Length: 146
Image (tube, rainbow, N blue to C red; front, side, top):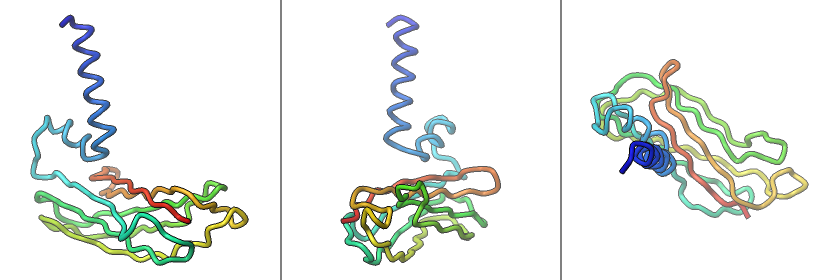
């Protein structure tokens, strides 16, 4: 394989890894494919994927830290209305310890209607875990409001 084709194949592989793996894939690549002591992985999920208006949604954030400990800022937002305003937003400091931790949040979904600016459909929730200006992990999860 020529240098140009090999470079194209490498770039394509990296893009696929980034698209499939999200934020943790970036850390994996930066670390040369090996988990290190400060690797942090985060998973974002909800108790269901389809909700009616005004239903309470349970949000689970699972953070797995090989050995990273200390305070970090957990930021979540999503369910963006037609004006571009996120209807869900949360920011809090969490204290990480080595191993798996689960954080649970409840949110009553807003009224879902075109008049309210939130038509029925698919919406995203985004979460980031940061310490200072360093992003430790990021995750995205989709839901449907009917």
